[in-house]
Length: 161
Image (cartoon, rainbow, N blue to C red; front, side, top):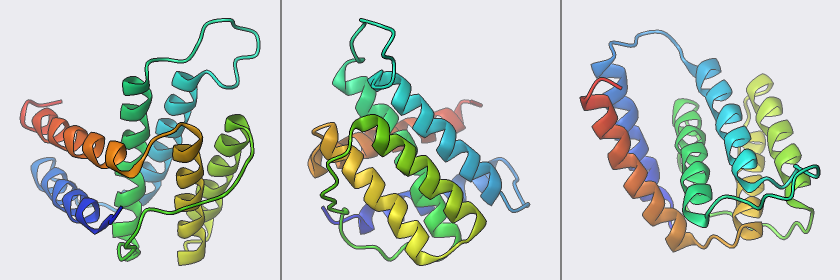
């Protein structure tokens, strides 16, 4: 999947939010925390870590929407730091459990937030690629869900969300 399109879409959304919300300060740390929160929400919907519960995961559509919520912030962070020239969806061959993938992703986000390098940013993308693979989301699923959620985010901004 070519991800240049979603970087462009995210840049437009970010610019729209910054203008309509009159945001002038650096929001890198806030977006980093938002990415971590969205990752947690995604993990919660998969229920992969809830060994104490017999309830299964949420519907795939719910999980996919949480996944792309994270992608919005991942794209946004890359745009802020000039790492928005990635071309293709990352392919990763990790075979760890979903719980382990979430922990690795959280760690990668924290490392990136404290040492902003392209290599650390790319590692987050690789982690998300591994999560997508573990959840059986393909590039088209992700792209379609991102486009849909992107429009919903514009609607939210217009309605005073």
